[in-house]
Image (cartoon, rainbow, N blue to C red; front, side):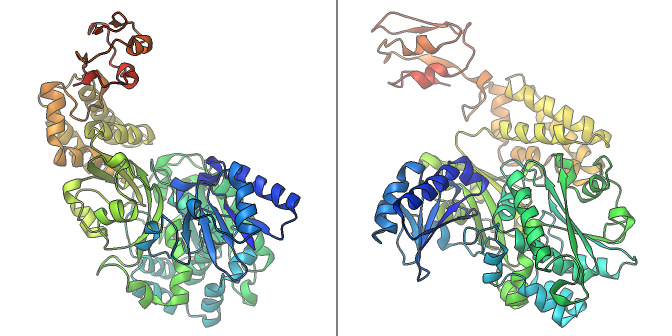
Length: 587
């Protein structure tokens, strides 16, 4: 019997390391014949720490919220006596578990191994067919046929733009140059996004294998993984995986006993969001300041160190071995006419089941939010989703039946992006959401383009003023004018897409902007300067509100209705939180 503990970053943050250590210590003390092993993130971040018990016959039972204090019972009942604990079970392969709905609508290709293997063991990866796809293409020795196969699969780049992967490889292969490079863009910087991190932490070899296959396709002998330094666990496991693959001659010189050689190096990024743009990323690898350059020439003809370069992201590379093994038709059978396969999303925000999901293209936003992720926390009203991060836009609940594919999402004004999906409820102020994302992009602008550097600053000032109750007539039109100028005059994707959150919120939630400006009110009761707190006659005089008020704006006697001095109120909301009888109204 084997017990696996999810030790991705999400699990570790929830206390999984203590669970792992407790399992090792107590199993040894009890003399139980059980192997305690580690695995990555299965995607159910909302139920971490996650522990799987895998019997000798291969049957699996998954437990959620299994903290260290529950270890003794798990070992005593399930491991020692073979009696699964129904109350803790979230999933089992025999149909039990109260969280099976989370996986029912998912189709796992990128996440196929996540939570199933030890990411620090190449033997685990080899045991499930790892590196056989690479062996297959090397033995066939037909790079053009390989590229044609990827084109036939319909795989499009999962980094955001959605450019056909096979075409990018073909352009790079046909480009003149003695040295060519493969780059994996793992510079995941969107707020609320953690797709790449989870894959690198949970299944690093699938990404390395995909890169090696891409290297063979275009004629490259060197690959780089540009990963942000804020991902220490991903970096640690990538270094382990690279060393293991080289030791078994699955990377490095003479792969699988052939004449093909492919080396991989890690480049740790310093966290600049603009380095997610491919030309800025290449400049950073070269040791220069990460700033975009004019295109053309495109990286396929003149990229890293002026050599032809193909750049794809983590999710794209993780798809490649599966496509080679199962064939392009199996992949293209999923999805829509122009958006094939699956898409991984990091689900965050006001959602019941936050975590990582992989769904077939063509599924609707509503199905992902409600069927897969269980709907809105506390059963509040669904308001919108933010797709594509700071470069994307907000899609309102009225458009929740929109199918998830590149064309349909683009029509809404948002973009697919790399896969961050933030869910918002009725308590979310859309003006403040626009301000938040613009503050991020303004801070992350490299400053090269005047309109990106200055225009986003002016837009942020207007949005901040509106959220503070100082908005004035013409501000909405000013935002639209500035957005058009920033979008049309910026060099790279950061500036070109920075106005998207502002434009989509104005498009779909204009009434909220007008309420902020004209009525000096925040309909979502979120912008503190616009809120008014009033003590109702139902106040029982418990003194709780007066005790927490930082400015002593509330006065009154015990068991008598209190009074709030509006001139002293700072709109902090502490009184409203403290009131146990709902006697403080917010307007």
